[in-house]
Image 1 (cartoon, helix red, strand yellow):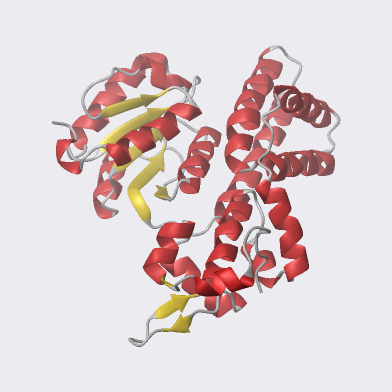
Image 2 (cartoon, one colour; image 1 turned 30 degrees about the vertical axis):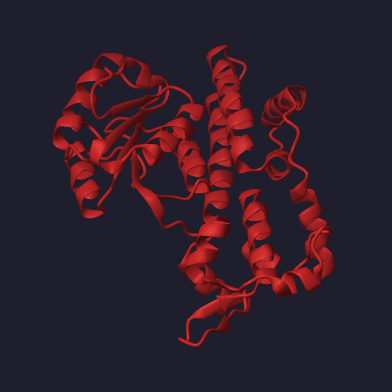
Length: 319
């Protein structure tokens, strides 16, 4: 059923041992629950059973699952991939095998075209442009290289009077819709850390939160989003209820600057010491760094913080 790499023959594949579901999860980044759901819903994968009745996945299927994970990260739907013929899957695999070239000029062109399409009120073309950019770049590079600078460009257009309020809202809604769809298409993650995402009271901007959620979910973190404007006491209760390792809040430039340090400090005191507090967005620059608080001024800083958390021995956190 799967498309095999040119360097791997079916004879060689048959020599490889089968994997249990835990090994497949570690190898592919697809959660056990996701694998079971796909098996029931789409008829793929099709594991055999070992002598103990446990699922055993042939190497050929694991190879396909590994490629599927990368394709899903680029925005493709699992149902389409599971049902794809060998020929169709091979074509999709070729596109996946060639990593997208990081071309700043190409990103700038997408940004310019987006501004023009918003001004032209051409919603259909705008959706197509953004969708194609995400498919071409993959979700991570799309968020970092296109959406982040695009947000700045739209903000500048609004401040200069080039954009009307409704045009800024139109742009934001298209990006929110696209990111929510992309996040929804990702395999269900069950890995560490468990991260609670929200914004504090009076912070209505959700776009930054969605961008961070997309990056974290791509890396296999378990994300629990509360949306925007969650009271601090509810953030604390939710963090305990969901046994969160990290609470991540987003604070935009529009949030009153004089309130940031006090708010972050108060939330830090309310949370158990074992739970890290991550503060992202432009407003993060106004917070005060201290033990248990990680400031994330850029999207790359989010990925760096996640890697640092995973590499830090649990017993040494906040020591």
